[in-house]
Length: 469
Image 1 (cartoon, rainbow, N blue to C red):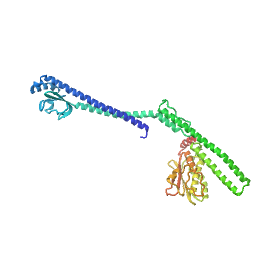
Image 2: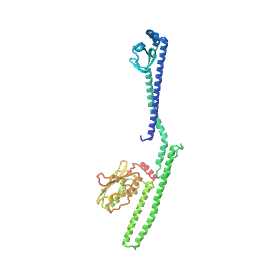
Image 3: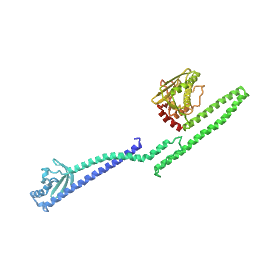
Image 4: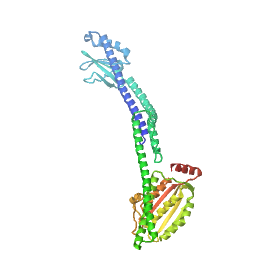
């Protein structure tokens, strides 16, 4: 069982039930032993009456007198006792009437035992030596067995009731025991990068194990909050500190070009420097965006839009970019619905995916952009005819600075484009993935966003996203 509450309830029910079963078994053995001692005492008492009836001169009595005296004593107890007296080695002097001439079996070496007589049933037998006679007295155990069977039936019923009751009690007890743990889990689940200042309330129980757990968790959140603050502050400071000198370097380089005092080869070198400075500026901006997105530091202005209208608005720019690179573009959309999105960010996602596809597509290669709204989600996929990626590479392609299959002479890019796409889609509450095409050639990158089927659902999605941002 994966649920701790279920395990606690089961353990409690099983331990309580097993304990009760053990007590019932012990009670059964004690009750059986108690009844057995009472039967042995009855047999002994009956023997004392027989010996008293025979008198002290019993050894000189004739068999007829012995039979007469014992029968007078035992007739009134014929329902309770079965008696036979024999004189070793084989002379039977007396049978009680209820034995019908059948002797009680003898067990050599034992004076107290259980035996069975045909037509009579099980007997608890006591053998008493009264030289030269052996007196064997048996008491039926039918009533004892019936009492023990009734005890077993009652115990089984009580065990079933105990199992059910302990299960219910275990569920209630586990809920009560785990309530502080559940509250701790709910609070810990609420604590995110946007509310790291929240802490778990200390339980009122004092210095128990839960108190130590809460204290350790709060200390961990303190360290996480300090680490997030340092990371965010570092990213902002690095961005600011890098942009200022880069801007100054770019300004001086552009001034040199404007003045026109440089030779041709020096101008080419300065132009290369300006290109690299632009690349570094872009890299700094991208890293800053990713670091802010990871801590929900990017604010989204989500607006309900129809994906068909959005794609129609950007399709001319997509075609212009594709045709400029000598490739072909195929766009298709199906379905209708509303999606909460910020247009500029999704535009950047699609252009990033398209740029990557253009880098690996062969001349005159076809790039297919497919959009469909179905089953409550908007799915956009972009397929190219490039060399494609393996399953392992598809899992790593969204990591930072990861680049695959970059043709010679092409702009390698920063290796952050797909990482930015993943961050933007994550901020929109969607997911993005890459996988090889089914025909074995090219790559398919797709993302999904939730569709809002009504204005009410739109508000439920947009408002929390704005508050979280």
